[in-house]
Length: 333
Image (tube, rainbow, N blue to C red; front, side):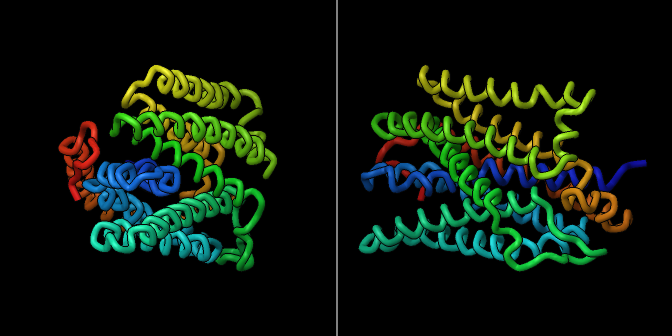
């Protein structure tokens, strides 16, 4: 009655998108940390995410664990190809998490922990971007095994996507500060959001063009007739979102720049889905070929149907409780 692999591919993609958005803005704060010159500004920025940053990584676990459980063949093919960037990402997240806690409890070495927070955030973000680029490029598959080399993930395209994600997360972080802070820090955040917004839209255009050149099938998916009728609105929507972001920042609106930055990420995710569907290992293995047996998928779906609303509920409640502006000297830590 139901296409379970398709349902699970949608659930995993949604979990990854939610992770990118939620953890993206607090990683973005780490990227922006060197540009927040005073301890007061850095404390305010950290306090703005202190109540929620731990829960943001729940979605990474759901996405990674869900891939392992529901698409074991894809997991077995992708992990050997991405071991290095995935491990670098995990070390960056751990380093950032330790720094987040210790900068409050070890004020004598706050400069070191600030450096660790920035380094961990940039490392995690850049590694995620590299993994994304390597995933889009595809991996060498021989039957049901990875046939590529240890360094296949390291290419100019994957480096480009790594830099693009740094710009994108910095945009999320700066628009989060626009929404959550005021005064001097809020004005700085507007300036940073303008710079990172222009950089993000430029990277989207460059990477989109580069992706089309990776394989003729990408070009056919986007530009062939009549496919162009439903693909053309995506780049136009990206351009409109970029324009509206600039306009909202110029009008000094609080929450709309952040929502528009999220819209840019959602549009990029839609574009990625258009390019890759129905493949879960790009241009090699489809979601149906990689899926676990239907009995397993149905069993896992029942559990997810119970737990997912709980996760969504406590996440929404946490953001609702700690809504509003963060003033200097205030905090939840």
